[in-house]
Image (tube, rainbow, N blue to C red; front, side):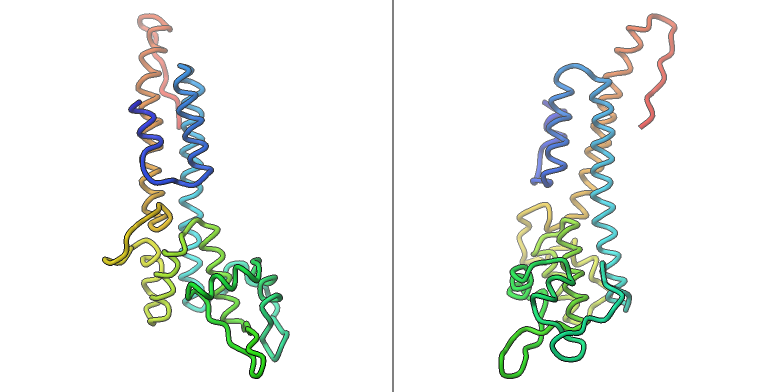
Length: 224
């Protein structure tokens, strides 16, 4: 039960991490500690991979804000309805999203496309396409809409130096409802939990293998 609570307690960590943790707990309960150790090390690798993705997305955000390309940006300029502008459907294709997602991001204040005179159709230039690509990259990396809204508020307020911190730092008046509202901090805590799971299995495995090997026989600690 201690092992299960360490693996599963807390906010919902996303489907992949929760599925891995459940499988690990079930395997440990069978008593096959060697297989459970291998699964625990794989689980630790999964958590670290998610953490690295979250870090890379935050770094890409800061690089874009400093004048670099947006994640997944195309080399050619987007030309469509007017020099340097495209309509929503083409913008969605260039960003890798759907028109509905673009509308949702606009409603949440994450993007603000221009309007065509006379028709009020949404027009996306290079700057807004880049911003939409950043939003998509952050969502794919696991950050919540609330976290990205904090980032957008900093960006629109001219505080580009604090964008990555804003993703991981709720405001005083903001209630943290999910792990994805503080995704990077949550993944760092998940990494520590995963390391503890490996250590718990090692602590149980070594005495058992020493006893099975007989007196005077050294048992090497598995390398994680």
